[in-house]
Image 1 (spheres, one colour):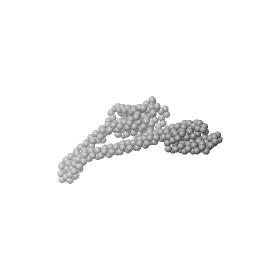
Image 2: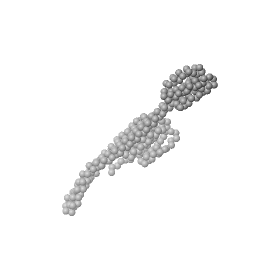
Image 3: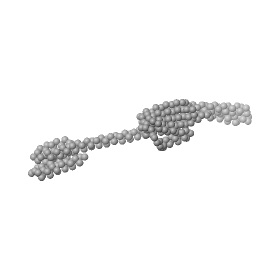
Image 4: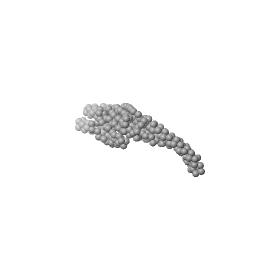
Length: 325
């Protein structure tokens, strides 16, 4: 901008110089004043605008040569300078805001990456801890029973020819210990199975909390029925479909509120995600909806998508009776 203003200064002074050359005598004196005038303008543009006051003083030497033309030209110049300065200021402000937004976006992406990485590591750690706990529990429950039964069977095999009655008693005792070990393992499995619904329900609520925090969307959650009989495979479908459905609400629905409803009915488990957005007249299934449908189909279920005052995505899964092994 300064180069443009300097060129404007030069054009104004050349124009006034040509006018003075054609109109007045003693042009050499006018030329000296104009050279000083231009030098001061260079200082004002390169160092500080305060030097422009020297230009006002130099106008005194041009009073005999009608400097009004020069004054009018510089009034226009001043208006041009103010306009360009404001425009440059706005450009600098936009540049700063754009830089700030880019930095915030990078920080947000970095935070999201760190958050996802942390959640992934936490999930892996939880699985490893769960496996360690299961291994330890099985070892504690079966270790003693199997060791004792093995020793008794080995002793019985030595006595089976010499003392068959005693060997028979040892084998019966070993069988009893094995049955006791199996009963203990079965009880432990039942206990673990009973803990799954509470853990998975807490995982679903944690998922909704993350969506509330990240998007600002109001999400209401309701549950109905007994969750104890839902297998882990059903929970995986519900968690995956709830995540995908809420992602679609945030991206496409223009909604301010969503309702997640989980119902366990006789013979059927039902998850519905609805919103108060603008809905969709012609629903086109992309990868998200197709993945949800495929996820439900793998468990013998189905997916229903409808638009009535918003969008409703319903996952239906058949319930299966659990049988003891």
